[in-house]
Image (cartoon, helix red, strand yellow):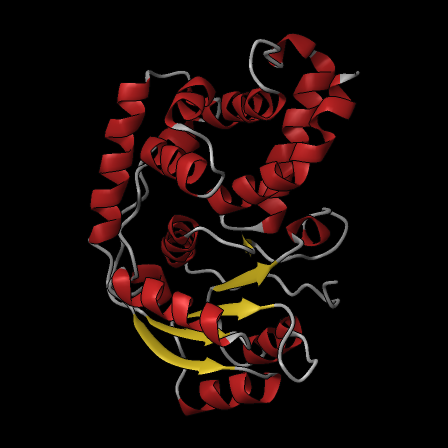
Length: 268
C-alpha cells in the first residue's frame, strides 16, 4: 500500500489538529498541504516504525516545529484586545501540542512522545504545564445549542466544571438566535442537527452575522466537514464525545478567540 493510501483515512483528523493549533481553516490546511509535499519530496519523513496515524502526525510536527515562530511564546495579551482574545493566557507552544495530541486527538502518552520526539515523562510534564496555564483562564459565558436533553446536561456539567457559565440551552435555530439577542455569549457549543429539523450551522451563521465569537460544532460525522474542499468549521467535537475532548476544545477555542468558519452547507 502506498503512503498516500495509508494516510488517507487520517487526513481529516490531521486537518482538525492543524486547525486547532493555528486557529483557522486556511492556515491549518496550508500546513497539512506542506506535510503532504514533504512526504512526496522525501518519503523517509514518514516513519514506518510507527502506526500510520502517529507517523503522519510526527511528519506534521517536523514541518510545524521547523518554523521558528511556532516554537516561540505568544506575545503578552493587552487590555486593548477583545474579550474572547483575553479569555486565556497563551498556552506555550510545546505544551499546547502535547495537550491537543492527548486530549483532543486521543493519542496515548507514549504515542504523543513519539510524535513530538520527547520522552513519555516529558509529555507528562508538558500536560501538567498546559493544565496549569488553562486553569488561569477567565470565566466565559457559553451558549449550548443542543436538542438532546441528556447531551445538553452533560455539556452543561462540563462547562461549569472548568469554571465557565452556561448562558442558556437552545433546542432550535429560533431559540438560539433569541438567546443571543438577549445577551451575546463568549462561546457557542452547537450541535449540527436540531429538534425542529433546522441546522445548527445555519443558526450559527445567522448569529455570526452580528457578533464575532468562537464556535465549537458537535457532529457524529466530522469527516464530512473536514474535506478541505469548502469553508468549514475550525473547531469540531465528534459524537459520542469524551469529557476531556470537550474541555480541551473549549479552552483551545477561547485561546484563539476566533469565530468559526461558515460551513455554507448542511452537514449530513
